[in-house]
Image (cartoon, rainbow over all chains, first blue to last red; front, side):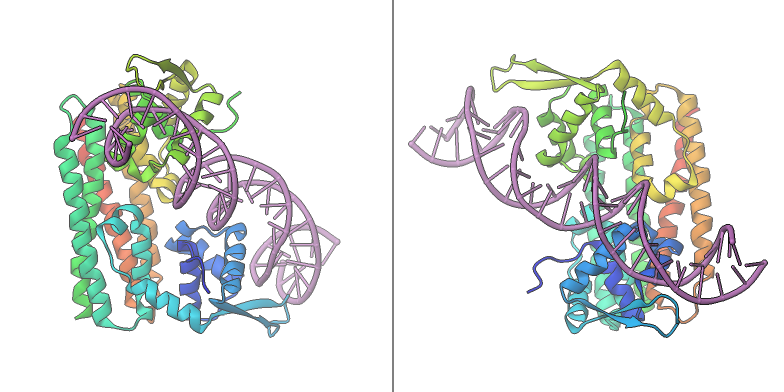
Length: 180
Length: 180
DNA sequence: TCGCACATGTAACGTGTTACATGATTCA
DNA sequence: TGAATCATGTAACACGTTACATGTGCGA
């Protein structure tokens, strides 16, 4: 069936059409105007991504002429699309995920309202916090192994990464409070 | 001559061979064992990247048989490579850079020891801090524009981004102290 | 009528991913 | 002899980037 899982961009699109039916143009505006912009707003990325999602049966596009403008395609998630999205949102947050694709983890959190379950979101954030701690411990260890003659710059760069992880872990634990 | 500028991975490789002559295998180990790992350690990425750098005349590979193992190629930067690296390190840090490629900015900082100039590094960090403030102000504005009926999740996700920027800005200002 | 906002796409290109292929040397 | 480590690469593939192409309707 659905052979390949979408990229983060694909999931972002799939998540957005859960909120309301949207055209490619609408979606591009969302990406252009919000922090989601990291997932690119270029037509050369989003139109092909939408086509892929449709081909995989995750979204469906319906023509809309009500505006009397050039007709646009309004996309909505299919049942398969909703199911895949829910599965993705509920995936475990591991140290590995955090180290290799923290943006993806944040993206999942941003769409967690789709699950409509405080318990699930709480679990997600708790896992996230634990995984962040583990990743942080990893960087701490690397910091200790640093040779004394290494340039200060690289050590400081590592510190920056540690501060970011710390800040995110702190955020996660504070955020849990919103879902109790 | 050098038509295209390297990717972040390319710059990471170029920066590493500034520290000591290294083979592709050595470089892979560095990527596999350190936080640089975000720039991938797969042979399918780094060997072609090295070949590109060599073709562009930024590094040069010399055969080394001293280990009596299979001969390996030790890469060193060329004059053109050193010059390009210095130019890259000295590039201005703008709000746009921070918003679109903060990883690249951190990567540049990590290799700033190559410039061997406290003044340059100080300037870099000060620009970085200012750019981070601007990016943060941008997210703050987005946060205010948030519709009241928007899911808490997306607002919290935005908060996470703000905390990360704040932490990084704080780090940058503290780091300046090391170069006075 | 000129340009802008709306609206959807394609084509060429570079690069990263995964998986595979090869081969020498050391050590159990 | 077989496994592990050292060491370098290629091939197929998917995806994102930039740039281009096209067309409608509205307001100045």
